[in-house]
Image (cartoon, rainbow, N blue to C red; front, side, top):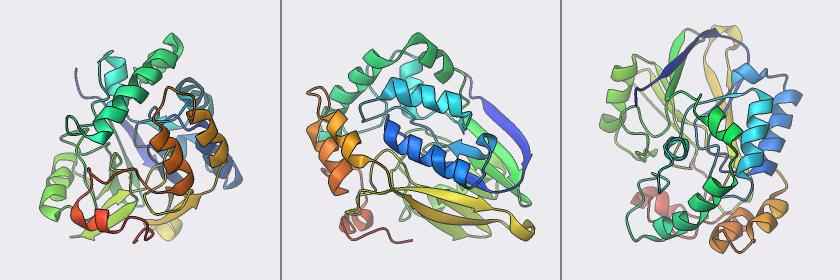
Length: 275
């Protein structure tokens, strides 16, 4: 299908950016409350995709997102759901643990989504771009070229740089990899705010998002942690239909495996996020 970009024009005021809700209703509820407390309008709240994922409440999460009025691009999961595909399109290695887990949670999510939620998913664009604090910003999921590409802080700048050229952007806000980070070079910024649906393999049950600020017409960002009712999320996931390993990760903050991670990020498991 054609690649669709939503152009939001010039935005101002604080912005909230986040990724990977992953069907985690409790985290989404907590983040919505943060936006309201900070007086950040829904149109200034942007998700990097994968509203649907590993957790137990895909339908409820999509409906709350819709009611909230925040904006999102398509993650690989939404693309696959839209196409009624047989797998999540996460680009996990065939036969890997992540691949075997996806054969549980993805059909579960498919079975729970209403036609109304699927209709909403089909309205989401592939990319969002806007101008903010005199910078051109593009929102992608994995990368501009591949929705399922895993890009980390340790990923070489030569891989990231073509994305800025292709989008004509100064800032790229991306998701998919599950870890918050920023990488700045050549007056360009690659920013991954992290995801709210799963911990960041840092040994902590809290999850990650970011706040953008344009005070004094200067672009700045701050990574933030989000506390939420993770015990309820984990309990709901222990339903006999979803991977128990993911329900444990919700509590422990440690991933079941690091098979998708480069050596540097894998070695930081449990040591906290290095920002």
